Amino acid sequence: MSLVVWSLWINTKNWDISSHNINVMYKDKKSFIFIDQYLLGQNKIDTIFSIIDPIKRVYLDYPYIYFLTRNIDTPFLSYNLEIEKFNYYDLSGVFSDFSPSSKFLLALSNYSNSKSYNLQDGSSVEVYGYKIVEFAGKNLYIDKNNNLRDLKSDKIIMENVLNISNSTNYLIIFKTNKAIILDNEFNQIRELKGNFLDGFIIDIDGDNKDEIIVYDNYKIYLFRDSDMEIIASLRDSINCVMILDYNSDGSYDLLVSTKRELKLYEQMP
Image (tube, rainbow, N blue to C red):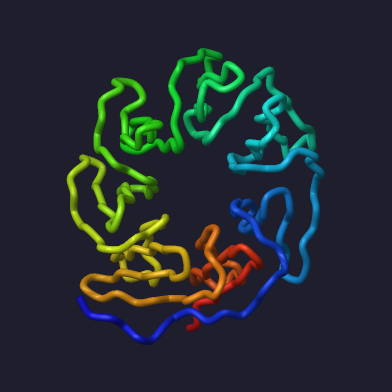
């Protein structure tokens, strides 16, 4: 593997805001960027609604925005963008993750009698864990013992899993000192060495070949074939990274939230 020392991206904008949640919604050929409950515009940040409770996670599934909060009495709510109305659910407890596609709400523990819920049919199950994703027609979750499981069969797919990320055709499994790439048949196709936190797979440059973007506490890496490029090195620890077309020029940009600020890396032509 060779290290590429040039970069397609350059830091062009900074905002004095930090978040663990960046979401992008596309509607009518326009992109809307949400930083928690804030809407990020080209020149300013707008508050589109006010939420009193501290926010843990945010999810977009138009026209709904779903929120996980740190309040055990109102831990989950949604907002309808079309009718501009909040919906509060008759739930209590502590929850860790939500799948907008399957509408499954994953409980973190049984604290305050928490259970996991399928909001489509109202059923509940005593399942607890950290992260849930839908991939290849299955709901997969990381349980309290860091096992990756199939929610329906309860089968353990892999042990000692720290995080998971799904793309259209691939699943990235993050373990200590490495990341494993699986295809939609759950076959391993690649392994990356490093203490990565999260990432995604996308055709970043439009050449019909997928690239892998992953990040650790302070650096963002791009893997292309046998080459590895460090896209960015940051002084502050990284909360999350989102890929999007910020300036609507047809190329992908990176929006990075650190513990102190939000940074935009635009792809140069």
